[in-house]
Length: 177
Image 1: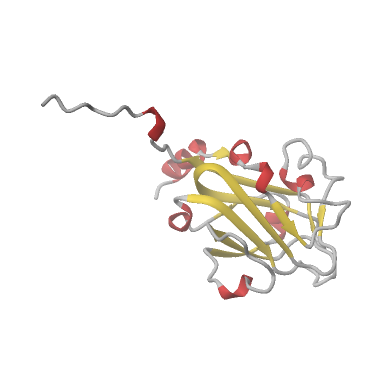
Image 2 (image 1 turned 30 degrees about the vertical axis):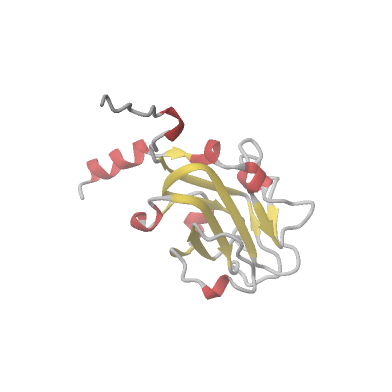
């Protein structure tokens, strides 16, 4: 693929924050004073002083449902050099996952974040695995320094929406016989 076509793909991608169903977003093992909204919501995630923090140990399990079907192209996960996430597993359309069963399912993609990624470099995903996404589960397995607390400053999701047919808008065609 030429560099020109790669940049054209990038231009068509949008920040998918407007398509998140916020009423269904969940995060297991989050600190009550440092919740997932700090890393995910517009305005909060741009403030480096606000973080999502793990509570009992370094792992976090984040469930993000969407208002419509999306295609996920890349993800941005920013965090501090020491406590930032390291191994991240992404699951497309897997609901009701918990720490007890997260390893029972094969991940749609697994990413090991580098220091560049933690500074905001996007991670391009296996695009074919994220074509018809209704929900995304992000399992942060460990962090850079194997410490007890994982900190996430920003989670950004880039992709496109899937144009779907509005079945309510269709009219029944009467048979003229």
